[in-house]
Length: 604
Image 1 (cartoon, rainbow, N blue to C red):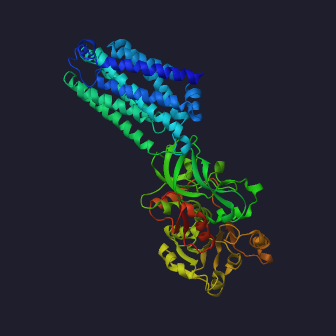
Image 2 (image 1 turned 135 degrees about the vertical axis):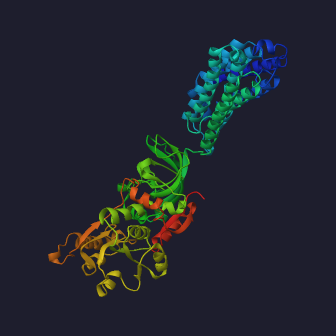
């Protein structure tokens, strides 16, 4: 029934606009008398055939699009269910306005212009909030409604300006202080409406704000010969404020956020080649209060990512969910965040867990929504690729060296696995805190670790570190041993020979190396018992031991942020891979020989 009513109204609306358009060609003689009360001549803001011609085209395009769209499934949802009787009411009011304006009836046309603008604004904002535009093909029906309606809505605001000015403007400007106050109040209100349109919804209403700006500039150019000088330039200032709102709206509209996205999701237990699937219909979550929506530029892979895929059964992991945790990108939407605005470049970490991040999110996706406390500003001095590798690895290194070991200047620190993702950042942190650093890595990465700042580098392929240090203890002994790869317990078991009695041994978790699997579980349990349970009087190691774990809430770490901003720490990139080549990136990571972080470029 509603569809038939709208179809009938469209036919009537078309006929009425053809008739009104014909009236426009008779507008000439009575303009000075009927409009402006002494304006004296036709101008930019008086009824004319060209104005009615544009009006006719916009009206028919809008009404015709609505008529067509309502017969589609999504269009029916938007036009019939959402708008209801507001659409036919708008057609009736706009016809009445056009008719009274064409007949040069200032007061009635002004009243109808106000009503048309109010109804149009209400409908448009409801469309913006309830049916945001998106880039995917399923949103084409929404685009067909939004685009012509945006033009139509902008035109109604412009018509309100025209009506207000031609009906009352010149008279008010010459009728004493009170009338002048109302005149400038009208101009300021128009500017305020423009700014409100720009900020009312994400992306704003560029058409509504734009036509108000056009109207204000038209008033400025049209009325300079009779406005007081101060009011003339006040109009100019208000027009530029309105123009700023248009620019803001245009910038926000450049962030075209779809409702669905592409992502690599963990579907089942197994290696990445078995567990991961590339999906193109993953929902983009809207930010809640205090959250931000980030368009991901780069994501960093972590060993824990593929270990969770391999080890945890589906019953525990509750798959599917999007893989990985570390990312860098750009804020494209925020909800009451005081630290971030649209366009800010950031890096961060999705909160870690056996079921991925909150609501199944992860870093191997085009977008991620998370609490603002989980991201930090990216300095201009580092790239998105470098920033992406700072999340989990940086937090783990800070936790182990600063929070647990409490390193300070002058200490001797050994970092096992200096070329790994965590180790490469740990070397930089230790040097930033004024420590002497010895690190281990393979022979091919020795120059790389040396360049990070390590004072001495040993090749573990020639001799395992614990064997080397037992034979040739360092001088002085180590104050802190930070095991960034934790592939063996022997480094701790023998550390009494090379770690000071009051020193501390910190690792990243019992045997968290690249070869973790269920087949090695008995050996892992035996090794952990030897490290954690065996007292010194039964042959256990008489040194303090602790394990660090990445902060599962993903909160940004102020200490890491300060070091990054000061240029003392940066992410180290081993290799970069295209989003579609994520499986190859995992193959590289699983070799255990990556020098730094393996990066996936989500957006080239």
